[in-house]
Image (cartoon, rainbow, N blue to C red; front, side, top):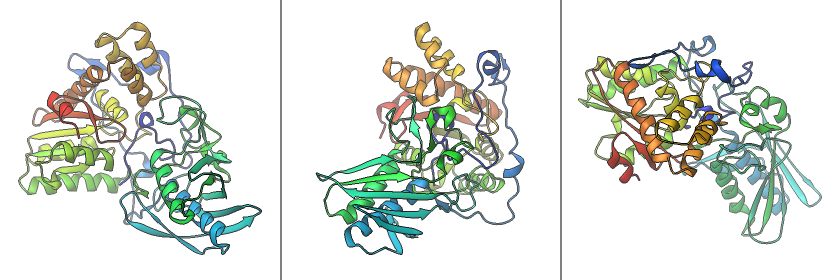
Length: 419
């Protein structure tokens, strides 16, 4: 399952929807009011309804492929053509899980010393603006033994910090980079090769994403953590979350562990190896629905494992975190900075951070990541307990952006024992 990321955790393309323009962050008083009313017990608890376009699904949802997977397939097809001179009709690539999948090659051509191939993205039933995009790879030999990966037309350029990518480089995330490198290396036989990924019409597609707000200019991002697109934020997904909690409760389990996606689930399982697999639920946007179901079914404890963006929303009292219904509010993180003794200058930088990840990096650089993260986790715990009306104990862990390392938590020993 693809990790459920927030704008603060870098998933601008995954958060886009056709016909929904990227929202600009608000500043000043309006932005400070975004988390809602803060009373003596904490922030107002809110569980917004799903957007109308996400409510009704008359049939099972079909999975699709990420831009990263399609780019790796195009790169391998182009390399096969460069090596053998024969245009491939099909190409097989590996997903991060090790599973291998086959793609049709829509186009391949030799052009002087270069070879080019195209794979068309199928996003399944996810309403993704990049569905039908022509992921294009152009390859040519170079000196040495390395695979050099570059961004071409239609692939965005990173212009701001906080995205986990080099400023000035292409918006190709780490997992897709690994997939492309592996796919090409399977064919190149150890020779050095340059790979340029491009997406015709990518700049137009990017206008319907949050890329520009995050400082990714000129095109889309090449994304993916599992290689597979599973539709999120639908009534069907909410029902599946509730069902997963019900199954755990029916087996007599008292603890439910809510994770935002595959990476955080893997980290949570390593953190809590004594719990059976049924206790771990990839909750996506539907924390409120999961908590309500757990309380109704008589469970006694919830553990939430997530990254900075999702935790920031929960700390603000938002229990249904679909991107169209809530925004990561870095003002809250600026307030946390002040609360843990950060300087006024640092608090101002965090308040105005480009993303929650940027705020995370500022905390880390200042040596405040652990203490500030602990406070953020504590605020989330308070929200979870209040929403469960006291029926559920709660613990919270914040993981880094690999999902493997716990960097802050409501239980100190979790950080010390982080996987």
